[in-house]
Length: 137
Image (cartoon, rainbow, N blue to C red; front, side, top):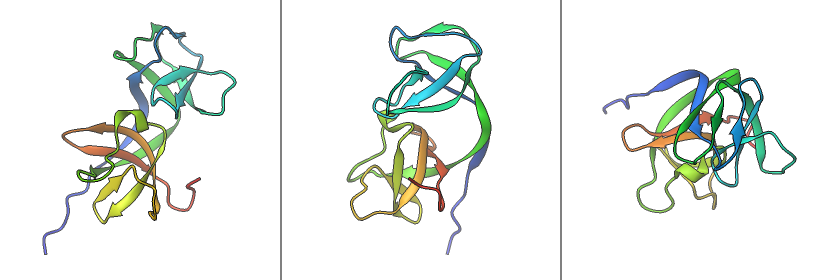
């Protein structure tokens, strides 16, 4: 049996697109909007998760990455993305993903256990997940 190569990284900073027309200022609160998957300014909302401080001044266009200094360093693990049913997509950043099998995560919660919080997706590495363990909500 061939062992699966594992890949995990420690992140103290996070780069991601900012909501269109939002004006970020260095040192102010940065949030992930779980309804859109974009960075957002701190505000009253049920879909915002504070993650750190903006590390630069920027105006959002939902395309250009903006750098955030995270409150706490996180460890993300890269998993293969679901290629058949409900793949994890960029709009899922900040949301939970779910266990599909022993090397793959999915966006489909139906009958599945939570894997953790999505921090990114790409075609090379798959899905970056902060593993939830027993802390999933």
